[in-house]
Image (cartoon, rainbow over all chains, first blue to last red; front, side, top):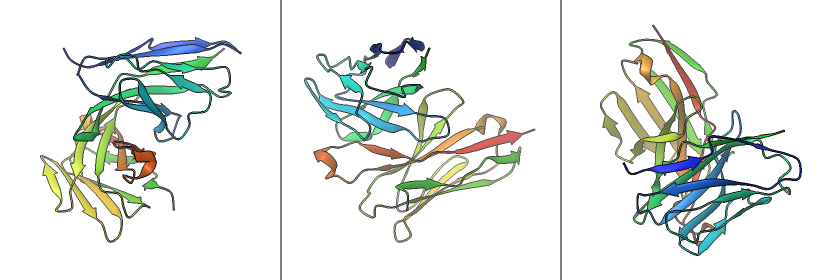
Length: 113
Length: 115
């Protein structure tokens, strides 16, 4: 089955720790996105990538980093510089010509210990 | 005005009711409009795109008024399974960072359909 997978489903971070959230897709989509959702809030764009080896900052990139070495993979690292990382993180992908039709993964819930 | 603003909700309606959600957006240059559905603690899923001429998909009807920068979603004959949060989504203007596909999500309106 084609789709987007995110792992882990739940992730716990200790103070000062960097953690990496995985996002993999087998839809052959060029573009991939990372969003953050806080309770009662809309999704906010962290980073996006339209092609391998290229990515751009979104609205709230501070404290996060990404890489796009393979078309299928777009991991997000939440660094210790992100002071309020507790949120629901969603990865999405889309195809050229239909950029705004985005398919989402099931998400990762990050909690700070 | 916020970039995308939705009715605060929650909407609590009986089965079979007709319910309407409204959304306004601030950037008159926005060109693409969508409704996404998000179930509790799940990912958003595209419900339907919104076209200037209005469009219908079964019990769901979406309307766009560019002059008023207003989008609506009408659900007829509500089902228990319609209970979810409905997100109004608008694309960013094409010149934002030279990007495409960047979406602005509203906070969502929660719908609860009761037996």
